[in-house]
Length: 323
Image (tube, rainbow, N blue to C red; front, top):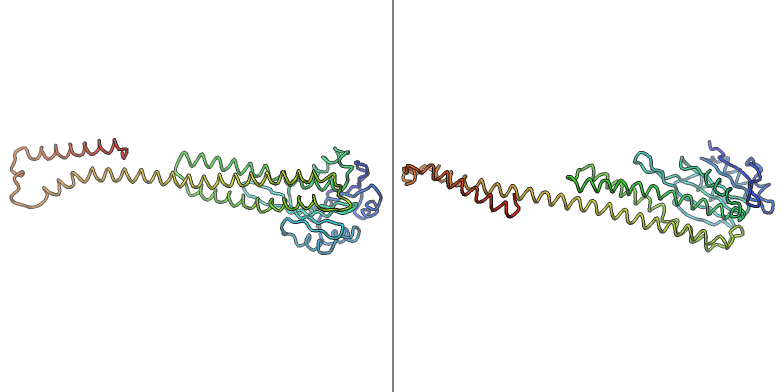
């Protein structure tokens, strides 16, 4: 069961009064007035009530009830239907809250399906700017789109900060499997953000071109401002995603370099140990006629050769950086 978050009528840039849903059409039909209704999780009965009052198109109502659509803008006569998504990131998990906006002459209706940042602050911000609110429905539409677009920025910054921490961790120690998994998850989240923010470019461009009775041509620069913000978000997302990819590549390169160093050390010690092993193997053969076996100082001479040879090899490998 949905609930009505707010329902009010405005005129001359000021709030006239709160109204029940049943009075929406009455106030919307008055010259210079428009109704702004905010709903959360609306059901079919509520949407059908609004459909009867404002003549909302049945296909738009059907999309609003089915949900899980993609961001888009559709026109039905002189009315608009917009689907947008707002990101919510809690405890490292990213979710997207779907919002449907119905806009036409005399009304703006928002249907929020989930728990995201409330549009109450958008309403308060608009009411604090009466000169702009006097434009009516088009300014409210701009304020809603701008608010949703700005919601992407803190999420992008949070992911960026987490990637930087992982980058420092990768540079300071061996790359762990958990680090790779987390970086992969963050890259997927960045792709999801891009998937939902990219259509906002098309939506803002379309709003600049539309010739609707309730969209003033003087408001087009505001929709262009939304487009600029969206493009900036796209650039930020691309940059952060590149950092995530580079972090993985750097981690793999560093891990490969560390493994190479370890392999060189093993090879150097193997070469050093090969010398006494070879000498011991020679003198371990059961030949009867070996002159050195009868030499009084043979044992000490062999130990000296082994020691000197190992020390020489160690010095060579140390100078070459293998040890």
